[in-house]
Amino acid sequence: MKVGIPKEIINNESRVGMTPAGVFELVRNNHTVYVQTGAGDGSGFSNSDYQQVGAIVLDTIGHVYAMSDMIVKVKEPIKEEYALVQRGQVVFTYFHFASSEVLTEAMIDRKAICIAYETVEDEDGTLPLLTPMSEVAGRMAIQQGAKYLEKPEKGRGVLLGGVPGVAPGRVLVLGAGVVGIQAAKMAAGLGAHVTILDVNMKRLRYVNDVMPSHVVTEFSNEFNIRKHIKDHDLIVGGILLKGAKAPKIITRDMLKDMRPGTVIVDVAVDQGGCVETTRPTTHENPVYIIDDVVHYCVTNMPGAVPYTSTMALTNVTLPYVLKLANLGWEKACQEDASLQKGLNILKGKVIRKEILEAFKWQAIND
Image 1 (cartoon, one colour):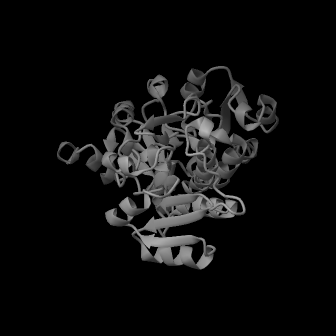
Image 2 (spheres, one colour; image 1 turned 120 degrees about the vertical axis):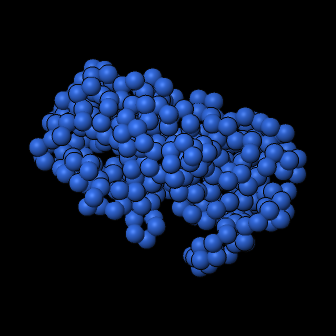
Image 3 (cartoon, one colour; image 1 turned 90 degrees about the vertical axis):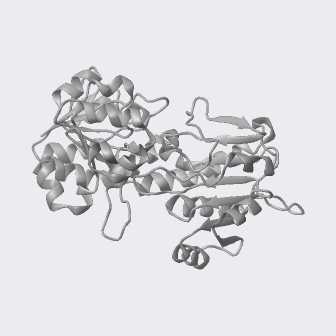
């Protein structure tokens, strides 16, 4: 198979779809790999690193798409890439279709085979290709939240860990999934007081067992959310509904109950956000303020630490890339139930009900 690795062109995205080690494995399996020049620069991998393991470096993104049977990326194609996607081409990347009707319609029009990292699902319900980036984003949520709590950044002027004689900052984590656990772990490590909310009692029991005593669990409902937003300094949104839009559990009217300078980091922004006032931002312009509440809603948070993120991502994607290349997408998906769940759009037809429901397309597609 001919596998293409284009350079990511979304704002401030420095990750790359495959490391030289991954290319080495593909070439060793008799596949041809095309890498766009400079694709790995942001993650610390040069053109020569790829050439030394057998990749062919091409000058333009157009050439990579045109020459390849399968495209392996990190982020969803953006407007400039839509026309490059070919009929019947496999595109393996994060898509988050339910948050973008424009992207969904574009991939339908291109009649490609769209396999989304975020919906590949193991038998136990875990999401192996989403997990490492959720781990990075959850940890980064505390880094960024701590930064934007500083007064020069329009935050409350609170040090999360506090100091002797001064109480630590308070962090509210919404969701006890991968993002929430990692955020709570980082915040606890800084010495902050952490409250983590979820509707899944099994997850809350797990958190209660493994976290220190200054991480407190409570059941998630509107009453508890409204209670805690009044006295927490940093709020981390880590709500996930597999392949679907995130529910808006913090509404616009709740902002008036937060103290000026409270910071919200909505990690669910890729899926539309779990805060009603969330809108996508970039690393170039990461924050905005509504009702004196600082919103950090960067859609590609792990892109700020591309070396770590690229290594973590390709550790888990490579086995699936090899399977797709060795067997072809049809046989690979037939033999691997986890990979089959990654199929979102197939030659012009949406095959995940969560996407149809997000845009109320059920009747059209039935």
